Amino acid sequence: MPLPLPPAFLVGVGGAVGAVLRHAVGEAVRVEGYPASTLVVNVVGTFVLAAVTFAGASDDVLLLVGTGACGAFTTFSSFSVDVVGLAENERWGAAAFHALGNLVGAGAAVGAAWLLVG
Image (cartoon, rainbow, N blue to C red; front, top):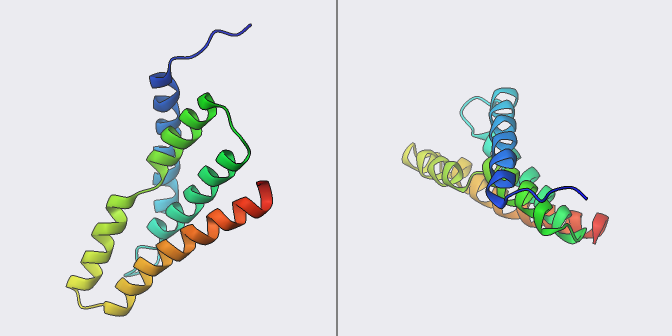
């Protein structure tokens, strides 16, 4: 029987993986003048968290993948700063698109995960 891993260890390992993946997406997804990588990580991370939740993942998997990996991968703080920055530069359409894109995209990701896994 395997030894149980401490919750902090699971969250830490998941967080390290999520942070590295977040950085990789930031490097790979670049759109001049628009924070596309923030939108991508928030929608993808929401899908992953919803999928493991709907799949009935164990508490340990939820700590590793949900709290750790998805917590480090997704970013509400960057999303908020991005929207304010776009608005401060009077890029109202981009700010509205980014705010709605994150909200609608995350909602659609939960719906897709529910349809695929739930």
